[in-house]
Amino acid sequence: MAEIGLQEVTELAMLARLRLSTDETETMRRELQQILTAMDALAAVPTEGVAAMTHAVPMDLRLRPDAVMPSLTPAEALAAAPATAGDHFVVPAAIGPHE
Amino acid sequence: MSGIDAATLHSPAAVLARRVRGGEITAIDLVEGYLARIAAYDADLGAYLHVAADAARRSAEELDQRRKAGFSLGPLAGVPLALKDLVVTKGLVTTAGSKMLDGWVPPYDATVVEKLRAADAIVLGKTNCDEFGMGSSNENSAYHVTRNPWDRTRVPGGSSGGSAAAVAADLCAASLGTDTGGSIRQPAAMCGAVGLKPTYGRVSRWGLIAYASSLDAIGPMTKTVEDAALMLETIAGADPRDATTIDAPVPRYRDALSLGVTGLTIGLPREYFPPGGLDPEIRAALDAVVAMLRDAGADVVNMSLPHTALALPAYYVLAPAEASSNLARYDGVRYGRRASLQGQNKASLADMLEQTRAEGFGPEVKRRIMLGTFALRSGYYDAYYKKAQQVRTLIKQDFDQAFANGIDVVLTPTTPTTAFEIGATNSPMQMYLADVFTLACNLAGLPGLSVPCGLNSVGLPIGVQLMGCTLDEATLLRVGAVIERRSGLGDRKPAMTPESDTQPEFAAAVPPTGGLA
Image (cartoon, helix red, strand yellow):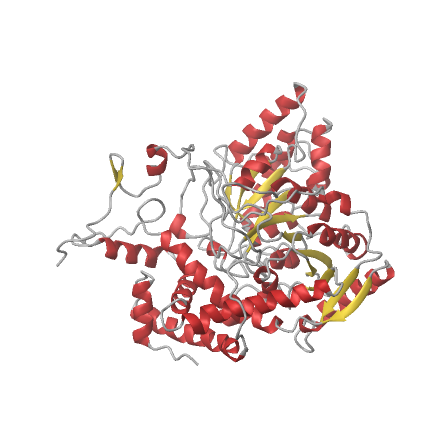
């Protein structure tokens, strides 16, 4: 059974881009542990040679014509953005010194 | 003022469309009638998140003008619909029940919405749901809890609980829900509505806010089996914008409704009738349905789906894994919420992202994102994600085997209990068990239908679930129609107070600006 510790919860939160408070981290650890314990039933199932299913209905990848299609105008695409400048989305600095 | 009475507003969508086409009633009267009911009852029920009163009135008036001008109208002419708030609607707020999308106005309609509008249906508003479809009671909505019309102290089920409640309380003619692990069928059962999850790929997901893309399905939630057939005829079909749609002809499902059950083999999988694990009143209701189906000419046999117990652990690995990827898009950049970061002059993009997601997502969504991130993490991938995918294959093979052995339809309870009290569940795992009978159908990609089959001793609805072969919705609807005729709720509906034939005084209470939308 996977034992999940506070450090692992913190790492997962970082990977998932979620900021958790200390209390939330402990609650999350306890609940994830409870859920993962229930998932342990999977481990006992013999699955050697069983294909992994990604979709229940088999389907081929379809190609569409490489043609220009109608799409959102820049104004429509930007209409719901929290911050814009000209035809751009504005975000805080992604790289550079933050101290 | 609408002269529409309560009996008309309780009518099936198919009947309303016929009457609108025939000029017996007008679309605007219907819209006003439902708006009046919403104004009267929805403050208490909370089925809707947004009511598009003005837009609905405009659509109705335009449709009435077209009829008067002699144009022929579509199969859902003038039928006021409520759409689950996970389906995007152009110009109408769509939140997925999440603060992350509070106030978001999509720039396009989902394919299903385009199709419904093309069939002359009218969008009345958007219904409440568990955040991003993650829940079984509507208690995970970031906005409010929807109450069950049959008992206001109880949940309507979830995640399409608002749609189920709106249908049950006649706050719309019919509705669309979405179903990733039972979210159409479970609330339909708990509210006494018909709920159909189509075969995976039967209905386009373009414009459905994604939760778990290999499991998500859009389907009808209706007052009658015929309405479910009519709605499915309208929304089904291949869509070049969704590469997972199946390119197969869409049958006229309503043709199957009168065929009866003679010659059909209906299987009862023993794993869905666990001794002591099923509410005795649900068990009794299903026993009565089985006796009725035998009497009606069906061959009902016992059978086994041996991997059933693994559906729940497999689902809660796969669905969160897909969710953790799908919900990565909510980053506070292009649309939706962004954390204010006031007083944090040096905040970076990463700070903004983490804070936005911390504020925008509720506890269950965070839990599933974390669970999915865990399952996909290097070192755990094979033990959890790949293993769950393999178990999914075994679950699908159980069904394939049953159908190959001559089973036409698998019959089970939809839910292990009737609607539970608001606030009664106290752990995530306990809540997950509410979907224990509906998960396998999604994992196997099969169609599933829940049909009401009676009320328990305290007046709560009970649902029976039918599952069938890939693309064989017609046979489910065929059996469902017999259950509806002989074991359904008949004239029984939730008691609404105040109730009267016409409610002119309530119409004025609808804000002219269109409520929340």
